[in-house]
Image (cartoon, rainbow, N blue to C red; front, top):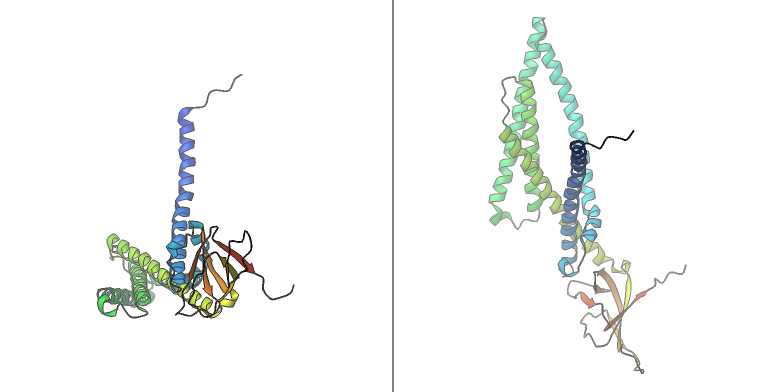
Length: 311
């Protein structure tokens, strides 16, 4: 007996299921990659801007930025994880009390029912207070946004503003949820929930991006304080560079037949290497010095110096 031919409709259904499953995996991965790229870019941009280098001139790839994103994201992710644990613990306790109060309010015993209704009333007042506090924090955050021309120069503006709005949106959402569980007549406003949820996500994103920039700037300052930790470089060139940094030593190489390199520079450190260029800084770099850009072609020669630490 020969097997019956496959049903085209069944094959198409299976293909559709596979495509749907792949889309469910690919879409979150694409969003995650985009987020990692952005935070890695924001941190790298702040880091190398400290040395006067525009990160776009380095030529880093998307993978480079993604690989640089864990450092600035570590602290925000830990904070969010701890907040999630705290919220989960608080919500569990509140949920148990709400369920107990609702059960007591339906008791056949008048005293127990009255006590349950009293607890529900106190819980409703507490939920409304949480909502009012959240709304107030959101209003303060919006006022700070409107006051950007006056307060935009404040060092903590870009962190305080989104944190206020994120805290306010979170409290308002949770307070409304508890109020609906306590009050049967409480109507759910889908529009308000969506707006607050979008505001919460945007505020968390803004705060995380700000921390990524601060992390990059902090890493740059740490590197500037300890340039001796960067790879040491000896640079040979065909022409004199006329460097102004006092810590860089220049020596003239002996002129030999076939020798194209005439000058050698020591006491340089490798800051970052791109696709076809490297950025060097003096070993005793400070804010008055300049970062050296070296294009990797036949006119320069790089030597990486071993550390003076015998194996």
